[in-house]
Length: 117
Length: 111
Image (cartoon, rainbow over all chains, first blue to last red; front, side):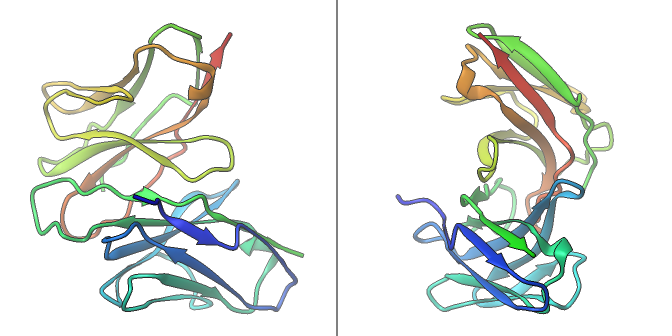
């Protein structure tokens, strides 16, 4: 099976602009989570989508948003970019079939590296 | 989610076993121990996970103490490609599925 794919891999934007990142999960996976990684804060959870609904959200401002499509592909958007938004943005997918009891592993994509100037 | 404590860095000689410890003294009964690693600038790679029994796969072994308050990830024959940051995470299996990453252990394999 192909792994999680993310596009674009690299992106340069300027302050005040907005950006949209895309994630295609592993085939058959219905849950997509997004994480931000910076040298100062490490890896932090942004949000999770399952069946087109946001199921969980991290502690990020409203400028960070996302959505999921019926084919489970997901996008995240950051509006009014700030210098501090420069980071590696990671997407992870899992099957979403687990209701209880069995560990469900998240698999990560390669990330999108965003640089805000 | 329970918090984990890992050494900041470790070194290991190529070909030797690398043993990476993790303390999770506040782990609760329904929380699993997960290990991921991240090679520079790539996405985290899943290695292994377990609940209370020791686990082994093609990449590594996971030894969990009987009281579940600590665990050790073992890479049996470390190679230079195993140089990475290794994250130990404890997580519930239901409800919130977010992973809470600490700072991890920077493992350097030396030739």
